[in-house]
Length: 143
Image (cartoon, rainbow, N blue to C red):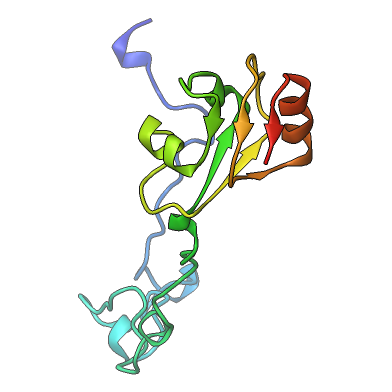
């Protein structure tokens, strides 16, 4: 391979549109910009979302979006997380102390993910059906 033989693949490059080259070219005189107006002039542009001075839609719409107000007070804990706890009783306080749940959480749900190796008692937590079966199969109970 030689540097003077390198060229782009066929169809990779496209000739630029030659504007202002007469009426027969299809883009002569106004060069496809139409007549008059801001966008017909050189340097004529406006920012994205500009609506001619009218208040743009992104400013008219409310800004609170889809953030859940409840999410900071809810949490989920997997079964395999409970294996690492030192105590046999599990409550929200023990989960906060262990660092599995953030402070300010009021409701925690135990979900059936992973294996539970020891018998534990779950107090004051929501538990899925599959997780409850797994806890009881390991010799624990849900209070």
